[in-house]
Length: 145
Image (cartoon, rainbow, N blue to C red; front, top):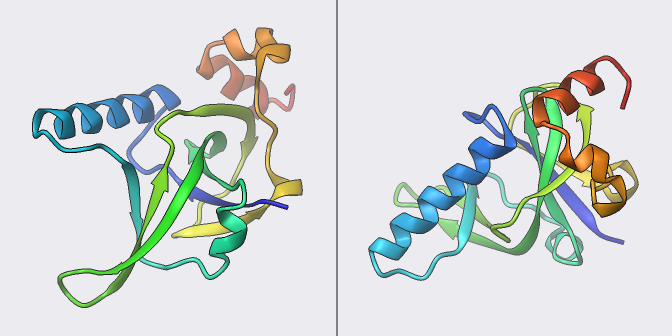
C-alpha cells in the first residue's frame, strides 16, 4: 500500500498560486534550455522511500487545509554546499485537487498513511471539482464537506 508525505505549502494562498509557481519555474528552465523536473528540496531524507515510490504523493497543506497532491516520482538525497544532507522530492508537475481537510501547522513533512489521505475530487464529483477553491475551503471550515 502506498505511503504519502504531507507538507505545508508556505507562501501560497491557493492551489492556483502553487500551479502558477510551477509554471513560472518550468518556463524559466525552458528559457535557459534546461530539461524541467519539478523538485521540492527538504532537509530530512525519508527512510521509507520504497513505500513512497509505490504510488505515493506529496499532499500540500494550503492555508490550514489539505488541498491538493502531486505524485512522487523519485526521492534523491544529496549533500549541499555546506555539507548538510538534504533531499529532492521529484514530483509530477500536475496537481490533483483533494477534498479539503483541516490540518494543523507543523514543521518539515510528515508521513501520511494511505487510509488517512483525503480522497481526490474527480469527474464523479464534478460539482465539487468545479466549485471555486475559496468556496470549497469555506464549506470545509463549516463542516459541510
